[in-house]
Structure formats: C-alpha cells, structure tokens
Length: 114
Image (cartoon, rainbow, N blue to C red; front, side, top):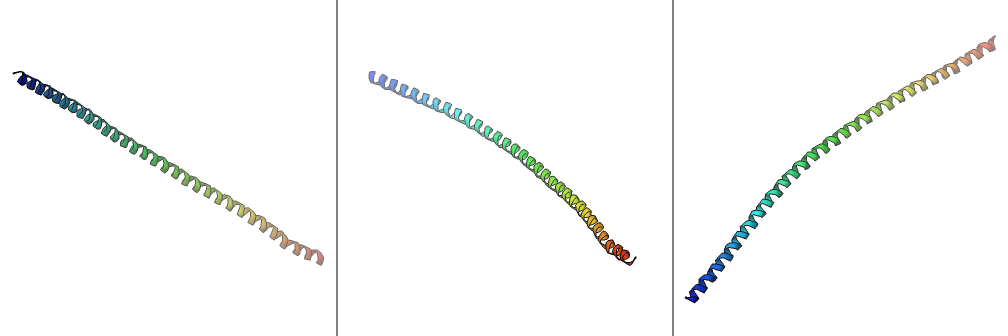
C-alpha cells in the first residue's frame, strides 16, 4: 500500500504541477492577446492620426502653392504694368525730342531766309 500511496501522491503532484502550468499558460496567453489587441488599437489610432496629419499637410501645401501662384501672378502683372508705363513715358520723351529735332531745322531755315 505504501507504493500505491506514493505513486498516487506523485501522480497527484504531477497533475497539480501540470494544471498549474496550464493555468499559467492560459494567463500568459490571455495577457498576450490583450496586449495584441491594445497594440492593434494603437496602430489603428496612429494610422488615423497619420492620415489626418497628411491631409492637413496636403491642405497647407495646397494653400502655400496657391498663395505663391497668386503672388507670382500679381508680381508679374505689376511688373508688366510698370514696364508698360515706363515704355509709354520713354516713347513720349523720344517723340517730344524727335518733334523738337524736326522743328529746329525748319526754324533754322526760316531764320536763314529772313
């Protein structure tokens, strides 16, 4: 009977150790599953934040690009207007000089004839 009691005691201890190992394994599996779910949720949140930040960045780039195009267009128009104004002033000045140059020989001829 001693041998039988010893064998039953050893089997009971082995069974309890095995049961404890199974319970610890289940707890670790549950903990890992919970951690995995948390990481998946964090990845989803990070992806959402990334997409939101990317959209904001795209909008800002579009706004800056639009602003730059408007400014270039405005500066170009202003330069063209200034160029045209200066061209008209130069043509007016050249015309007045040319008219004076044409009238001087006529006055000189009239003065020589008189």
